[in-house]
Image (tube, rainbow, N blue to C red; front, side, top):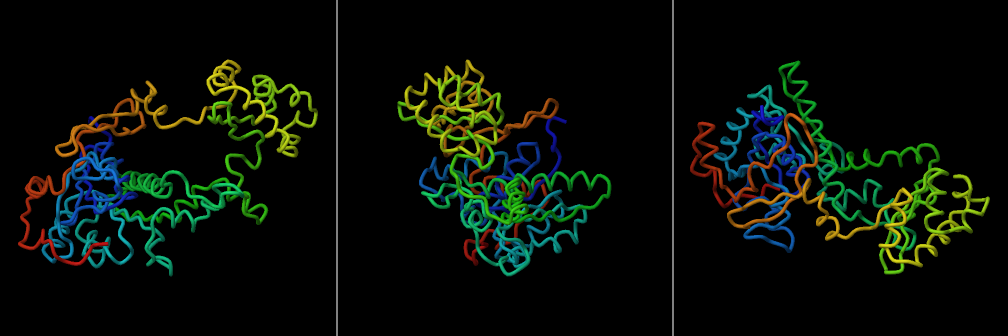
Length: 395
């Protein structure tokens, strides 16, 4: 065995982000992921403003290690073809709104009837039941409804979404854990099962331990930007050259190390700040004193001083600094060759495994690139309308 999931076949009906990210993870671990696309392709192929060749970079970064098959699920021929394929795979993944999979003939009930070992993973914005289930939803809408947007920002900015599509990422990370657990359970029972997760539930779950504060006090935690409601200092400060640095001193020891390194003798001499409780009570004094200290010198100076002192800190890096770092280049950046996009870089899977490492075996597929190849492997022939261009939208 060269890869952990080698030998498993995945039929991937997902589009956009949260579904394809999860199936990409399965592909990284060695599963054979067959991406079923409508004739017009995954919506993500044309999403955004940056393209390489015919496809958006958003699509290219989410769909490596997959083979693309075009099937029009709006036709009876397309549905029959998908059902026959599902009878021969281990895992089906879909992220349609509730009711759409049933309409397209690929519901869990329909497919598991002919494949009782099937693991069927569904992700949706708001779940399969309840009044919200029929609502359309994308990452910022889910962030707003989950409460995580209320936590982000400060009193001046108001609520903010996170700088990356948080709900779109945490959902497939959790759903993939569910799929792996279902695979293990199948080893014991011989049966598959449905794995079901909504973006709203995944995002609420991920706010641990902020939920504990609410359950204990009945209050929503306030928005305090980069600060922390239980640790001071825990914040970003501007340096003399307009850069920013993040520092944390969660114990008295780290507080003394930090204050000494930045030459804040007046803060060290202030008895009110000698304990965690005192620093919490006098947050404004700590923040203003550190802000004044960091403003005296440029980032390069403080980076050297704080490294030497072994303080807990980091410069706030831009993307050039992150991705040109030699360690990141070595461990996380991979280059792929694509027939239309040419040579481009992606972030590789960060999970290290000593015996069955993750691999990038193939670049993202072109639309329908593997249709004939895959159908031949499955011993199937497409009906006359299976790839029809007309038909109602699948989403």
